[in-house]
Length: 552
Image (cartoon, rainbow, N blue to C red; front, side, top):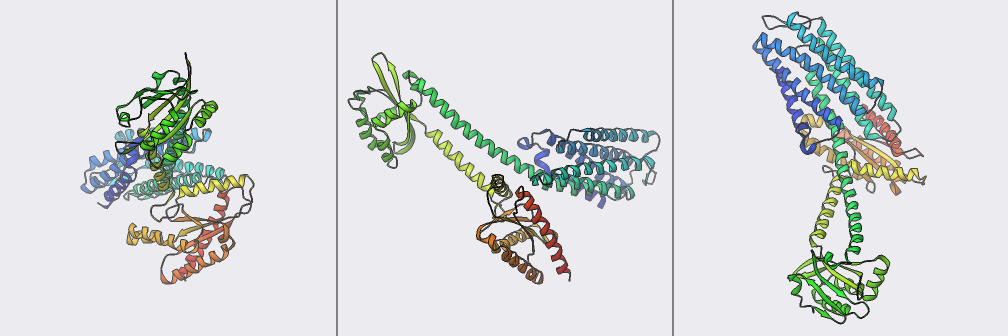
């Protein structure tokens, strides 16, 4: 039953890794490309089901059911290649003759598979299953599978052409994702080739398992982080829009002040003041404001307001209130902007409450009047404070790697954008990029489990921190770190690299964490991505040297 066990394991892993997309949680990804990918995952699940069932039926020697399941197996395999083709074409975003050729070819393969499966029911052309439940492949099976292999290879070549077109353009994220598409196609074509000659081994299921896991790690994971960034940007845009609306609302309220009725609602109290004399009267007040025992009318509004303000305004706000709420200041602000506004806190029944005082001039029959209203904005202010707190927490979560405590890949992209901006402005800047890659992480994961692997990554981060004490360290991949070195450490970069390499030589002997490293200085490249690529190449050279030393 090992045959069915492989398919079962692959199906469980796919469900765990992609449950959010399969169940369309929170809309998952709304773009057309991800809707196609979701359908592709469902096809893969159906393929796993037929593969699992095939192993069971073959074990039980149920020839008729095995024939039916094998027929469905061939059709679903072709449909999977068709949906993979559609996904790649949509994701790469190229609308040309080649993309249309691939889409048409994918549909033709599915159609031919359906025709051959139907024909095989009448005349054996694909395969037969004898009375002993032995599977016998026939000529058109090889033709059908080879055509799928050819399409998978061509799609991988198509992705490789896109990779070449992106080199040197600073789009490191897209390069990583396009490489994953290329690798998926090559894995699937290789496994399908092996499946041709080993029909009793679940090699194609193994290919799907490896390929979808790679996609989840390097494509879907990146897209989800970008999706989170877009949500954050949307929140920032919404925040700006809210402030803009608040300014527009304030402009509208300047007009609304011309009619006192427009000031009712959330206003705690409204006063009408004769500016030339200071005489005032209260127009309306809420029941809570009555407890302040402020006179309903008087001869000097500003003197009364300032005196009573000392009793009812929060102690932390009273000095600012007294310095700003003077007749000269209020009238000067109204002449400049048409409206005076001041935020502070009132103490109502022993609790502080945010309010906003607004004042504007209106024309009445008896001359100009100053309308002053105190508006209850407590819920709005507290909501905005909570929103700012949540946004700050979200930004911190995005910028700090939860596992190691170093800066995250999102923070690296922001730093990269800032440096690219300075490069574009032709500023004289000095920096170097160091790329570090943790050796033998897969061995640790496979031997001791992922908890040990996580600790191994944390230990690697500590090694890097012990060398680069003043530079920002970023975790940019599962086992990959980047360091942007500036200032004094840039001047000593060669010594720091020697220290890291010395650690590696000692680590090889005592079998502790080895961190392959490569460094590149900025030397008038067009962008940071090119410096990153040079450092990455140097890191791989160091990685190979370390492996040689380890094997001595």
